[in-house]
Image (spheres, one colour):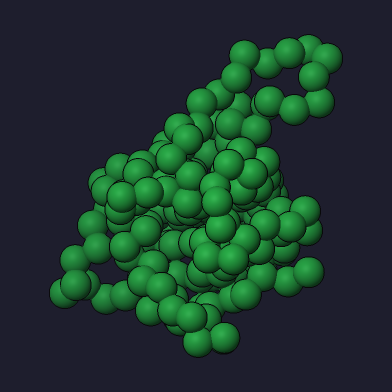
Amino acid sequence: MTPHPARSVTGATEDGAGWDWERWMYPALRAIGTSTDKGMCAPPVAVCALPPEPGSAKAARDFTRATLLGWSLEELLDDAAVAVSELVTNALRHAAPCTPGFAQNRPIRLGLLLRGPRFLCAVADPSNHVPAPRVPDDVAEAGRGLHVVASLSDAWGWAPVDRFGKVVWAMFSTSR
């Protein structure tokens, strides 16, 4: 299982289905105080669409690790890969089952962006359900994902996208 990657600023995918990464990542960029001014140089960006399949979390980890290696951000490899995996798993577990037509029309979208000393990973899904950390249960096998993301990243949050859907993001500081 591999994601459908696009490593261009436009977000065009190999199969011709394009989407504008700025439109769905803008809420996350605004939340961390980073603009997407058109006059600025395009930041390094990597995006991919992930199908609602169990293997998508691993594919997202692999995509994140490969991208960070390409950007010479080895110091973030493990933490960012785990955070992305948790965000994608949450989208698969909580958004996919409750969104009609999810598999056919609205894949999970993973976006990675490097802007100065900040690295942002963002996962968009078509659900309007608000992500909320649960009170951890000592014996439960699930329910700790957002706590893990919060502990590994400098900040995390979520924002609605357009009329439906949301983007959940995590921000990391780099050594740059």
